[in-house]
Each structure stands twice: as structure tokens, then as C-alpha cells.
Image (cartoon, rainbow, N blue to C red):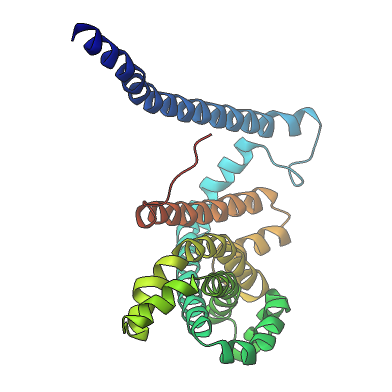
Length: 281
């Protein structure tokens, strides 16, 4: 009995060790990744601060980090930076939500009807190929110099990645599962809720992540072409004044808005798709 107990304890030891070491190893990997990322950021900021001066690059070409920070303070005090940033963030979110809802809805509807998918596919493909930014001047002629054109451009840009991802996922749903559900008299809505929707969620979330980065582009294009508010307008205004620091600041703030939206979607995806296995390097 003693030998058997010792053998069993020896067999269990590696498993217990793995349970203790794997989480610790993952935490160490995350710590190393964070330290490396922060170190790289510090190097980029140092280069930004000192290289332009060392290379005699004029401030109107590449301003230093301290120049940008000084300009950021001036923009906040005198240029209404907070209002411009909030306007861009609001229309980025609105355009993303509306475009995503329309894209997902049409993707699911077309995925349920092979006939209408074949009928509408050429027109959807034509709109997808057409450069979305080219619609901005047209929207301005139709709706004037206000917030509607930039919202419409954002919706148009966001719409297609979500539509394409959802439609592609609907095409690959397991037909055997659908046929089995129909054999058990599950309604069309029931098939969608129990089989199609869960099967397409990973593709939907991937499309939403792509769309979140494109939403910032859509808003910026609308503001650059004909806006009078927002960070895109500040980029246009700063470029006209040869104020490179203003342009740099607006670009950084646009990046922050896109990063926040993308990070929020990643967190939502991790909660919704928690049942999917994760690959750890």
C-alpha cells in the first residue's frame, strides 16, 4: 500500500506542478510583453524628441514631442480641442453602430435566402469595389456642410466588412445540423437562434473588429472633405497653417479613439466567445 501510494503521489506530482507553473508562466509572458512594449514606446518617444533637432529638421516638417505637447495645451485652451475630440468620437461610435447593424442584418437575411443573395450580389459587389471616400463630396452636395456626410461615409465604410464576414459565415454553417433541426420541427427563427447565430458569432466579431478601425477613417475623411468640427477638421486647418504639431496631435487622438473602440470590442468578444479555446504561444 505504501509503494502504491508513493507511486500515485509521484504520478500526480507533474500534474500539480503544471497547474502551478502554467499560470505563472503565462503571467511572466504577459509581463515580458508589457515591459518590451513600454520599452519600445519609450525609445520611440525619445527618438521623436531628440532626432528632429539632431538632424536639423524644421518644426513645420517634424515637430518634437515637446512641441506637440505645447501645441496640445494651446489647442485645448484656444481651439476647442475637447469639443472637436468628442464630436469625432461620437460620430465614430454612431457610424460604427449603424453600419454594423445594417451590415449584420443584411448579411443574415441574404444568408437565409440563396435566391436574394444571387440577385443582390452583383450590386453589393459593385458598391464594395467603389471607393467609399469618393462618396463624401456627393454627400456634401446633398446634405450640406454638416455632420450628416461624415456619418454617412462612416456607415458606408463600416457596412461592408460586417456584411461580408456574416454572409461568408452563413454559407459555411453545418447543413447537417440545420437539416436535423428541421427534422425536429424547429422553426426558421429557432434554427437561426440555436444554430446559425452561434455558428457565425466568431466571424461577426472579426468583422466588427475590422470595422472599428475603418470607422475612424470614415469620420476623418468626412471631416477633411467638408467638416467644420472634429479632429479631421483640425488636421485640415493645421495643414493649411503649416502647423505640423496640430496635425500630429490630431492624428494621435484619432489613433486613441480607434484603439479604445477596438479594445472594447476585444473585451466584448472575449466575454461572448469565452467557450472557444485560446492558443497560447
